[in-house]
Amino acid sequence: MALHRDLPASKFSALLTSLIKGKSSTEKCMAGILLDYSTRDQRKFDPALFNTWLNYLEGWVEVDTLCTSRYSITEIHAQWKDWKLQINQFSKSKNIHKRRASLVLFCHSLRKVDDDRLAIVALQNVKRLSSENEVLITKAISWLLRSMIKLYRPMVEVFMEEHSSSLPKIAVRETLTKLKTGKKTTTRK
Image 1 (cartoon, rainbow, N blue to C red):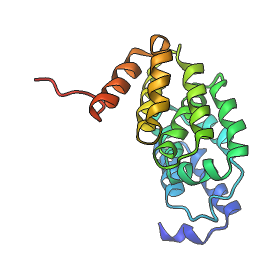
Image 2: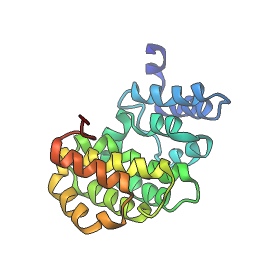
Image 3: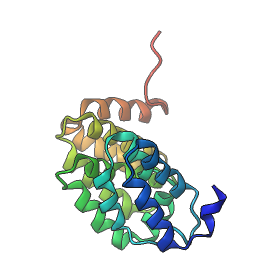
């Protein structure tokens, strides 16, 4: 893993692109793993690359491995102007994997970064995608809402009061359980 740490951002992003365009899921996931171990300087590439990369990814493993790395914690907040536009476009995409990315890109960052701008857009995306029935989206909505509870509990509580009737049932159940117990699900006796 240490060999890639000397690459400048342009060569590092080219390496990630070649892995993401690879044939195997292992190659695609390796891009997300390398991104997780990247240096601060290596993460200074254009976020628009994610739009291209997501065209080559399928399923929650490939999408989540790329979108939930340390990159999302540091760079979405730091490059918010560029990311806000990108994430909004993802949430409206015909590509379900981009729509999932519009949610899961926030999961790690909203656990660690106290920035209402991110939280507001995340909740807008949840609302926009709440009528979808695909498990790739319904589980991402649940994950995102639960991820927000630590830093944005009052915002999540108000959102749930106002929108729980239009949210996927699994998201409502898991989020309300997390708000009440601190866990995703309750233990059955």
